[in-house]
Image (cartoon, rainbow, N blue to C red; front, side, top):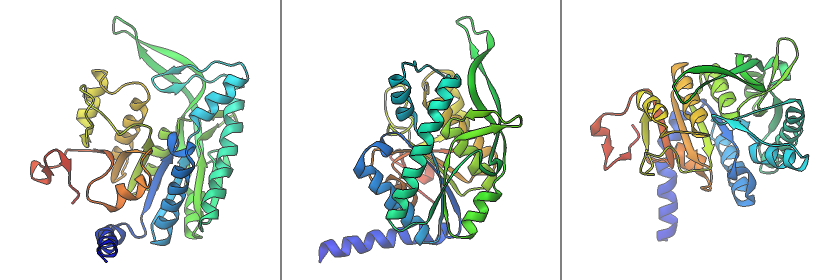
Length: 307
C-alpha cells in the first residue's frame, strides 16, 4: 500500500505542471547517448507519448553526431570540429544526410510503436529551415578575430513553421532532421541544438529542452550549475569554462530566450525519463538557462526550485 501511495503522490506532484503546460509547445532536441541505449530510447518514446496524451505538444528535433562520425570513419573520411561544429565537405554532407534520414524514420517508428502519431520531416520539407552558409568567427592566440570556412555548415536564415503548426493541429508529433536548404537549393548541415532553438523561437515554445551526454553545465571545479543566467553564461564562455560542444548548446539557449521562448534546459539524456523529470517535478535533472537568475528566496542550498 505504501508503494501505491507513493506512486499516487508522484502523479499529484505532476498535476500542476500538466495543467500549466496543457496546450503548450515543448521543443526537445534528442540525440547522443539517449539515442544509443535501448532502455533510454524506450524511455524517451514513452515520455513523448505521455506528453502528447496529456495535451502538451512535443516537437522533436534530433541529432546524429556519433552515428555520422561512425559512418564517415568507415568511408575513410576524418571528423573535425570547430567550437562544437562539424567541418562539412560535400562527402561529409552526403553521409550526414543519409544517417539523419535513417535516424528520423527510426524515431518515427519508435514513437508510433508506443501509441503516438509521429511524422518525419527534414528542414528541407516545406522550406522549414531556410539556411545560409555559416562563417565561423575564431580568435587566434593574440586575440585577433578571423573568419573560418567550415564547409557546408549552415546557419538559420528563416524558419517557416506552418507545416509544424498544421501537424500539431492534426494531433501529429513532428520529428525533424536538422538539414536546411539555401535559397539557391544548396543543402546545409545544421547543428541540431541550433535548429531546435530556432524552431522553438519561431513557435514561441513554452520550453526548449536539449538532451546532453553530461549532467549539464559545470563550473571550473566540475560541479553542476543548476541555474545559469545569460550574463553568467557569456562570462563562462569567454573564460573557457564552457567550451567545445557545450558552447552551441548554451548559445542557442540564450538566443531562444531572447526570441521569446519561456524556459530553456540542458538536461542529462543518460537519465531515463529525463524529459518527464525536467517538466513535471520541482527539481530538474540538468541546467536551466534563464534570462535572469531567480531571487535568492527561490533557492535552497543551491538547488533550483520551480515557481
